[in-house]
Amino acid sequence: MHSLNLGILAHVDAGKTTLTERLLFETGVLDAPGSVDAGTTRTDTMDLERRRGITIRSAVTSFAIGDLTVNLIDTPGHPDFVAEVERALRVLDCAVLVISAVEGVQPQTVVLWRALQRLRVPTLMFVNKLDRVGADPQRVTADITDRLTARTIPFLADKGATAPLEELAEYDETMLDSWVAGGPVPQDAVNSVVRRELARAAIVPILAGSARTGSGVPELIDAISAWLPPATHRDGAASGVVFKIERDDRGKRVFLRMLAGDIRVRRRVSLSGRPAERVTAIRVSAPHGFEESDSAGAGQIAVVRGLESARVGDTLGAAAAADGHRFPAPVLETVVEPVDATQRGAMFAALSELAEQDPLISLHSDGTTQQVAVRLYGEVQKEVIGALLADEYGIEVTFADTSVVCIERLVGTGAAAEYISSGDNPYLATIGLRVGPAPPGDGIDFTLDVEAGSMPPAFFRATQEGVQDALRQGLHGWPIPDCSVAMTESGYWARQSHAHQKFNKAFSSVAADFRRLGPVVLMAALQRARTRVCEPINRFTLDVPSTCMDAVLAAVSRLGGVPLTTEYTAAYSHVEGHIPAARAHVLTSRLPDITGGAGAITSELDHYRPVQGDPPERPRLGPDPLDRDAWYREMPR
Image 1: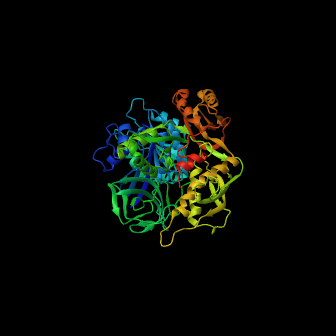
Image 2: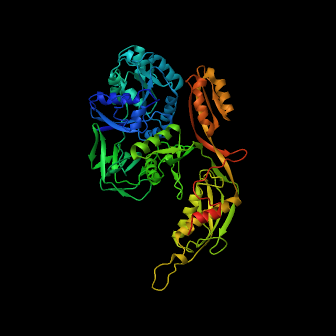
Image 3: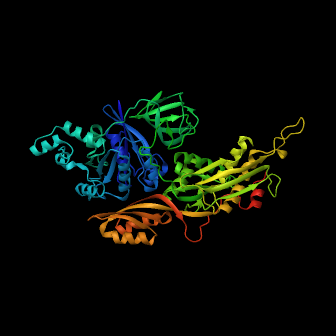
């Protein structure tokens, strides 16, 4: 039996979840299609999804067309969850992009299409909502051709089963001969050409109908079966991608797309190079739900238990992103506080579980005060996190104002040292550190300029841990993502005990001495090296009506943006450039008014640049190692 992993993507409210329900109904999985408005859909399972009528997390369900099992992945449509969409795209064989027959190509449609193009995912387009007043599939098809791609092949409902020979003739000589001769072409021949060209993403067939009434959906089902390339079944070592994680009363459920080989119950597997864990149970996607299985093979989607260390984005074996693309981390941040202070520990544990499901949240907590900061793509995510904490964990929280996350870069080199029993050092540890700048993207390089045998390995590890933790908050409170750190001095007091007595900590160094002294020495070295605060700069892409171009460019300029390239056409124009991340959301919010709702924007982190003028200060979470007295008082030995 063949399998096909199919994504359903769309701008918010274009009807993708309704289409999912209709596909399940038409293929016999559901007795009746669910309703988004009534909150009865199969794929929107979160209470918040049902209340808001939007998809927040990717969902997997399946149906059968003959001997083909289609694993259908319903993805979020709201731009705040674009990272969730990107993760889902990694596991797709092909996609259906849903477009409203009334509104046509909308801003998020453009964003999704670019992602599908970049990953070369074979894509069908389904023009939905033909039953709505104002529906115009011909206008929408022209809109698609103008704004998305000219490689369209329309199979619209008003044309019946007639093949668009004129368009297909460009891709096949037999079709060209048939079109010139005006003769009929067997449907199998049409299917063969479409399947071949679609597999290499050379064409984009367009179908039309209404997910609500079912019109055109049988034709879509036939197209899925006849045209879309099924999953490739590759032999060899087990390889796959973790794209979703859930928890239930039995623990963690890891959604794994298998790319090659197979995994089996009781077999040990390693994710992203971590220590291997034993698979305790496997369920594979099947037309009427996930079914228990002893194994999962290439092309299948499996829910696996036993992989407790798994995080979304982990890879099994040689699996990799389709194009090596890493989605940029969010540059917005907020501090989360529990309404009931006694729930602080429970809140942190709950957020840690949520971070497993969305690693780009980038959870950061201070070990002493337990203040917690999380990263965001937008304000809707803040609402989602709050609702999840309340609904699933019973924890009410409040959020601080959202701020943009800057970073600090080292200006020069600096060194500092603290010695046992010297000055005000209360710890039984000697540490010397030298810090220096590192190229962007190199990360933190911790090396030893002392003999590796001069101390127990645990003391070196503890020093490195203290240094890495301190680098999360530099001289101005911002993280320092790239720098070199060398340990230049080391010393400790060996294990001491009195005769016939146990180990005496008062006279012996322990790992905590090095973990707590490391930040103090690091900050002293950073003060000598100096740091410069740098703000995030996004690269934006705009597609706007040409009549609005002057107004859009003026708005970009007022917000500190710089256009880099512009392309003009009669109807729509394309602009790419840079804009401070702090102003990007302002441009996004103003664009609908400037363009009458017709403009589309994508924006993601491109680079950092030094802040002009006085650097912004970030409130510090927890004790401050720059204030030695306060640090020693709050971090006692």
